[in-house]
Image (cartoon, rainbow, N blue to C red; front, side):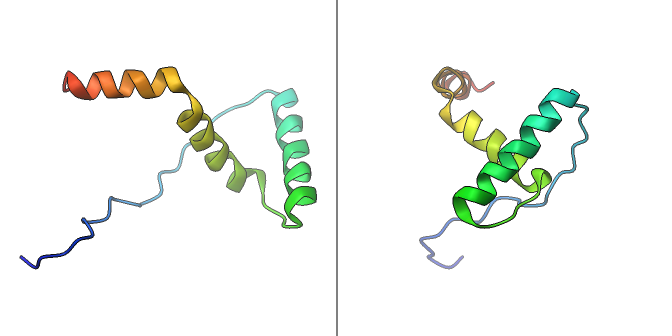
Length: 76
């Protein structure tokens, strides 16, 4: 095997997930897309923004990160 510094990239195959949301949440997401458009002068669909929003939420949740570290230590 070649001596390569970069490790093998993880699977990046998208997974489609279907969810149902309330009308209020749908309106809030549409407003957030408008806010994003105003902030960055770039239009993105709610469908494109939601995965990034969920990822940012998970990355910012310190209790979840701690739990993940502890689960990894326990080989869960």
